[in-house]
Image (tube, rainbow, N blue to C red; front, side, top):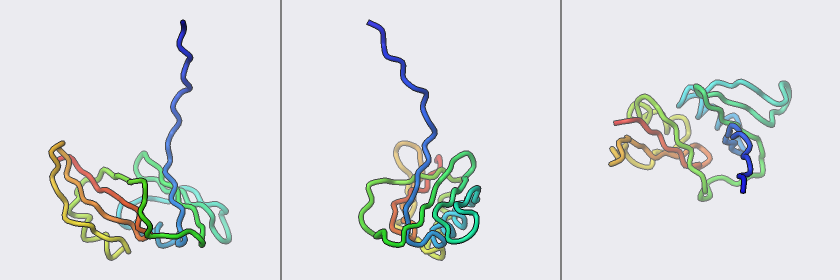
Amino acid sequence: MSATPRPAPAAVQPVIVTPDLDRLQAFYTGLLGAEEFTRVPEEGPVFFVGLRLDGSELGLVADPGVATGTPTRILLSFAVADVDALLDRVEPLGGTVRGPANDMPWGMRVAHVQDPDGNAVNLTQPV
């Protein structure tokens, strides 16, 4: 019996639906240095913004009717150079710090924060 070949894996791009695209874009660009690489449409009211963070991408979609602050079922985790240095920037950018950074037994320093929409975000760095 021969195995069925699997298709090659595709790239994964998390996309956040938000009622305030400008606010969320400012959070991720201000905190993590994300850079806009695409905007749809290019002129007029924007529907989609693609952000690039080193080799990764994050999409933001505008939907004024979406609710925020409800418990999320997804966690965005970002590897950063210095977790502690970023914590002071979270709240001025509209996010929430859920507690201090902690060294985890698996060798990572982790801070739990929320973006301005209430989405769970982890900032991580190797210990």
